[in-house]
Length: 408
Image (cartoon, rainbow, N blue to C red; front, side, top):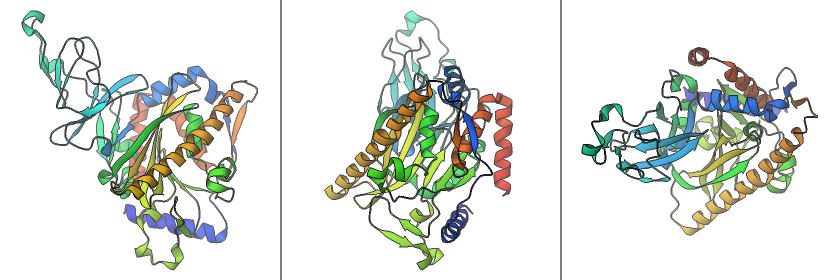
């Protein structure tokens, strides 16, 4: 069924391209400029969105084998991801249940974690298995002092976790069937080629750019080119979106290869043509396909709010369909990844920082999202709605949304 959805979307894009049209919203939308600059709203967003909603915390290939682990901090919460010997992923509060010291740092491979403060030991399934000098410390019920678990789901080669151990929001409901679409990338079997972390502007300013083709031939005239497309149609699954340009061609970004889809039978359309564009996972993930060294890859951008309203942090993952083994492919992938750093950090985020500094003057009341910027309009509607929703309302919103998506 999801493959047929991809094909139907592609037919829609072809028809719009032939007619010279795109799907537009009913009207231009105004967003208060203060939504980017208000520090109190920024703190509410971290609490109501990043501390309550499922977040895509890692691609599966970042924890490639049993014993793999990764420690990270998300919106002030220390998180530990592990893969146990059966291959199951766990998500835990990275705090020793003795005094709260993190039990793991960085990433690597381990079957157990020893706290560097007093030596308490935990298995990678979170269970407490050793209290240092237990006879001196006194009796401890190990079963009640395991690492605190977070809800976690591995699906479509991606790992989601909810940083509220008491959350009743089902992660599958939150995904609204979008995970079925993401399965077509095949990320479960992909290779993590490289990653890096870059700093950016306010998280919504940064995310606006992922939902915007309108700026491509202007801001990226020196990288993508001044004749690059600037139109996009938007497809939504709850708050998650795909945006892609109306076209009859499939261009392999990063190569000179192009295919006219009308010259190819539908059954022979390649999967990368069906997955063209930018796929966003609310509230902080962007996925776009590229080719480096003639090998299929994807830039997965993981965006988190920074310490202040004007800051964000993005981890860029360059995933590859196959692990490169020859130097030409490795060099090509490195060149593509470096090019994307220039585009995002040197152009998108540098512009976003200037934009944020200007908005901080307080002299602009509203910013505009045009009828051709439906993705940004939807993003801000969802953000405003979810920031205001209670925990009970949050669960209802997504259970109803999941039911509606399934019924279509």
